[in-house]
Image (cartoon, rainbow, N blue to C red; front, side, top):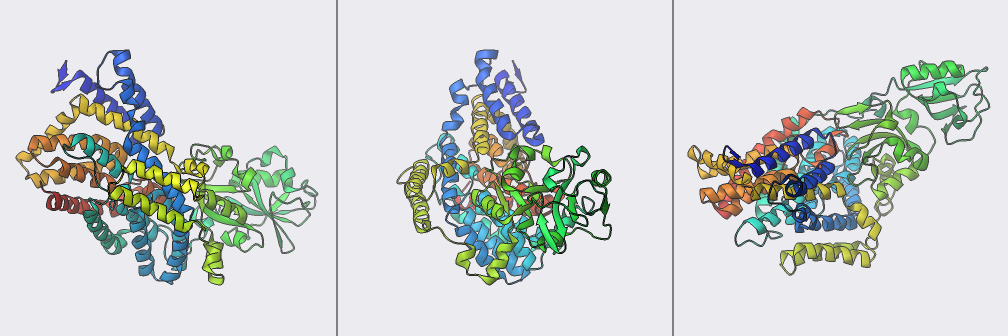
Length: 619
């Protein structure tokens, strides 16, 4: 049976793709779990349903053994080794010193350093490390952090076009080139770098001019964190009266059920401030407690414990920062490879183990301030926390949370850079190993997958990277996503589905020149990448583009490269690229901000890459 030229197996594959796309966009379940479902569905088609989609059970799990997938694992590990050197942190310190309060220099320094770095180190951890630094830099420059964080993400995306290892989609494209394009063994390490440099320069120029005007300043300059997270009605100061039942008790001894939704953060007494609940000092009459909770919960707390609210004493960021304790009110970002991803705040037990209280959460465009213990954390979530300095240092070391350490900048003004951002003694070794990996792959001495794992082996053996840290550095959700969508692309090719879609592009040849068809391919790919993620897009679009080129008698490699560049440069939505999602909360952006700033850049680069590919590789 066939419908509109499609065989039954092809229709089944398209139906599976449709379901997967809906789940990718809606995120009803995590994307990596959707990918697992795809693997199971493809493997079950012939043995269970008797439908041959060209994918055996062995083929369905072949994504795990795909050279691109394995290489990406190695690159995550190598990036972790470079992160351990302290070079990125040191660069952030130099940037703060270089900009000296200038808005133009702050923007130029942010994008001018992030882009080139992202060509060689996985851009997600780079952005994660830079976000707190850039936020501090914006404060010192009297600039809204929103004006820098979106350009930071875009610059990291642009940098991914510089080298083969710049982004996972480049590595996937290389493997598709090996399989689908006759005479190709893949893509060279620096084969498309000249065009990548053009894309980076034009993209950075856009961000310094047009993009600078379009990027909104959502977070006010010098914004008070309490105001930024709209917590004015969730923080209060209450005074202990003479008849209060809490007199003589410590904060952690409160057992009144009516106070279950209220957290005591500080205890003030005669000019002294004590962090709560981490103090065993008995409460006395006249003590003032700083509490966090909804207006209703605080009212119940007052009534149950005979407390008086100090209505004229507002709680602000200064209430915490000016207090002589080691606890800070600060922002923290959930890292992509954080062990907290997928756990609720209560399940992380960070308050128990790290004495870190979560007061509010920005997740995507949502601001959450109540029932935080039940909130499931996702990569890129922004937390407003109160934690001690030692916990800030702990989190910034292990990468589960990236915390804006404002005291670090203050120490920079008073101390030597070596104290603020020390380099590891293994820095020269780690850099040499990374350079060796790039050289071996570029000179084609060994396949990039072997070069990458050789580098990981060298870093572990030389002590630059612990094996546990290497495994922790891998974003396994991304690996499972890759492994799941790769066989989906193979099934579309095997059933003839890719050829049918390609006929649509071929039909455009009747009204467009070949260069126009290539541009249409780029625009379509870019649109999909912003909706269903770049990884899923490149797996689905490269077979289509290569088939279309074959039917048009055009250069298949040129069409493949256009898809690769379009997939790697998705700017129009916060879900289009992981770094966009990471700056979404910290920048206080709205969904439409990405469309406003990113759409012109996306269209500009579609034209640039289409013309560039046509000139450099021919049609």
